[in-house]
Image 1 (tube, rainbow over the protein chains, first blue to last red):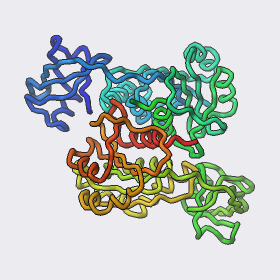
Image 2 (cartoon, chains in turn green, red):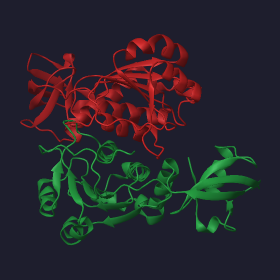
Image 3 (cartoon, rainbow over the protein chains, first blue to last red):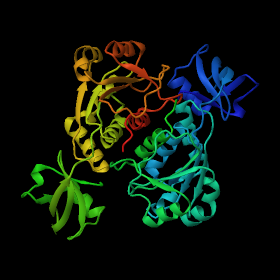
Image 4 (spheres, helix red, strand yellow):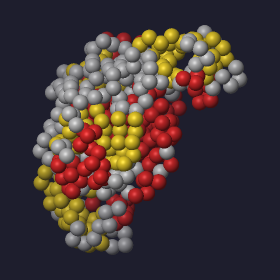
Length: 238
Length: 238
């Protein structure tokens, strides 16, 4: 938790907040926060700044906050990701959020096991929790928007063209001669397949939608490794 | 397992191998391998090629292999990494291996908890297992070399100058104005701190040894995310 994220309901006034629950616990147990301590805070979907602890009870911390700094810029990206297995889903959401992804579609694909869609971690509240952890890690405040699409074909045929309009369209796919471009300053829609990759039919459908296949070199990477590799390569931060 | 890694003791002759244990199990249970199936194989620290299953018993698989292709090129890198917490250690070793790291020093730092050094995952055999998983994932055969250094100062003062000689020396450190360079084709020694970063004294010691501090943008990333981000940025694969 490199940033304490504040939600509208935390605010008692424009500058006074009251924190309970998970953040109270983390601040007392991990940061060992005492009255007078100062910490980095940010308003959800708003500015970043500093908070000073002004009071501490058995179950709450009071802070006085000043917010003045913009959150880091979002990636100019819409990420289309085949739903990862539940074990990887949490980490992947956290990573993607920490890296600045703000628009994420979790989609079906042939090699996504049906059972993955039953994961309790797909509940809106659970996804939001993982996003919060990613934002707190990366010192960011802008909550990503995550959409679930359980049918590949209707998504790619009917929805994707509008989603990807006016953007550079890439699909990470090992079986191509074109290396993934480096340092593009361009609105991008990036599709990443499941473990084992998209099947040829899926790659074809994406190509019909204007997506170009790009590879990451001879190494086959897990999705959780490939994602930071791709994003860092496309958008190295200043 | 995108590659079946073969060790010298698997070879019955120049082209015949016999596999038992973990690989036998994986090939029968995950790949559902049958006689006649062909799979990608590689000789540990050697060439990559193809194997055809010629026989299958209750506890073993026999293959006939031909090896003809070079493993992917290693990163021109020595990685100096503050020992991650045990939970992260396994993943970090796997990621680093999959990404092509061949020389890794796990070192102590002020913010490395003493207990981390007690982790059973630091045993040579355990580290080797994680490296094997990383190689099998990335379709690589070259086993990384991992060294443990439990004392920061003697390592940095006495050993690091020779290790880093004739290489570009970088330390990932958020508190600097210099962004990490992009796409350098240069032998590099890269130091990455623990959660919470190197302390100023440690950064100074590294700077005295010729290391330049570089940052990855305004976002603070976990080591397991920062590592693929750094390596992809420094060495985007062709």
